[in-house]
Length: 265
Image (cartoon, rainbow, N blue to C red; front, side, top):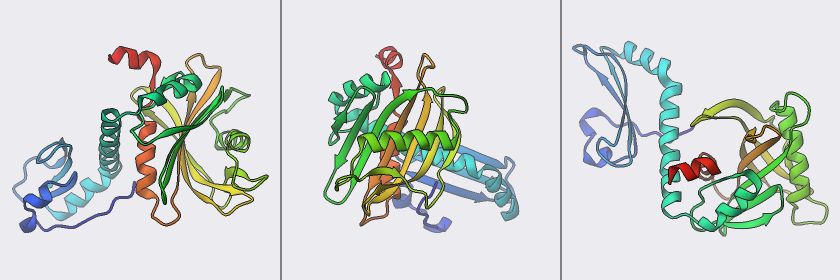
């Protein structure tokens, strides 16, 4: 995770800074009896994520941080996702539940502004298209074929097949594919009991000069016969794409199976 950092001395840490949504506090005091890393929510504002590193000296503080840096990053990352999901549910475009249900057997909570751009029996393309920033989610499914279905090679092969069939470019014969300039990276994750393979890479348009980042979640359908993929990608040639991708990626984490959504009512 990449975040923009501002270093604030303790003496300058006033109410203005206490209102920030993500805070990392380093408390170095020789009298500290309880060294460690503490995670808190909504201390001075809501929603807010606060991490405090308590140490007797600077060396201990650095050791504690290095040992917990992955957990700290994930804590802030999930806090950011929860904010996006909360706003999406508050201002949800509920009409988009049905097309995602048709393809995946579950729902994604899309905020107002998104619309369904394309729908088939096994593919749906949801878009929020502004003048200079386009954010997209695609949901698709395909049959389990052979072994090692979650290898990077298999995931990208199936992705390219689906993109060529469903995502044309501006010119005749052009279509979306996966960029080979940088090899996609996969890792196994779990969120709220749902295991999936995350894939990060870059997309491009064959026969055109368009491209950008994407991230996808691949997992089994409930009956184990299909692979379901939730994919987020952005096109924003004028801007840094990090924040825009983070926003639309957060929507993937709002996915709920039909049974889960009914149980939550």
